[in-house]
Length: 190
Ligand code: GAR
Image (cartoon, rainbow, N blue to C red; front, top):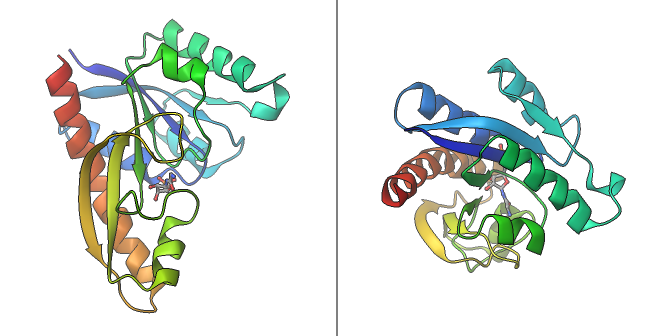
C-alpha cells in the first residue's frame, strides 16, 4: 500500500518536485494527495498543478489565530486520510494543533548540518560564518525552530565565495536525501 502524504511548502517547491519525480520513477512508495501552501501564489502551486495534484492555498492571517489555521489544516488532512506531513520549505513554526494530530508523523528538511544554522537562510548563515563544510538535515518536527530529532544528514563542501554553486550542491543533495530517508521511514512504519 502506498503511503498517503501531504507536502507543505512556502516557496519554489523544488523538494516537492523531487519527491513527486521519485514517486513517478517508482523509488518512493507514496502518493502526494495534497500540497498545502501558506503563501498563496508561491511557485510550488504551479509545480503541483503541472502534476495534477490538488493544492490548497491558505494564508494564516485570514484565520483568528494559529490554532484555527491549523484546525482547518487537520480537517483537510484527515478528510484525505493523510498519514504523513512532509515539510519542504514550509517557513513557519508548527503549532500544538498539528503536532498533536500528527505525532511523530511530521518531517522537515533543512539546508544545514543541524544544530548549526537553524532558521531562515541557513546557507547564507553558513557562508557568513566561513564554514568549509555544511550540509542537509532531515528531522522530526517539534515545536522548536529546526530542533526535532535528527533522522539523516549529508555533508556538502562549501565553495568559497560562491553562494550559487554551494546552493546548487545543497539542493541536489536535499532532493536525493529526502526521498531516500522518506522511503526508509515509510518502510519502517508499515
Ligand atoms: C530548502 O532548501 C529547504 O531545506 C529549506 O527551504 C528550501 C526550500 O526549497 N527549508 C528551510 O530552511 C526550513 N527551515 P524548495 O522550495 O525549492 O523545496
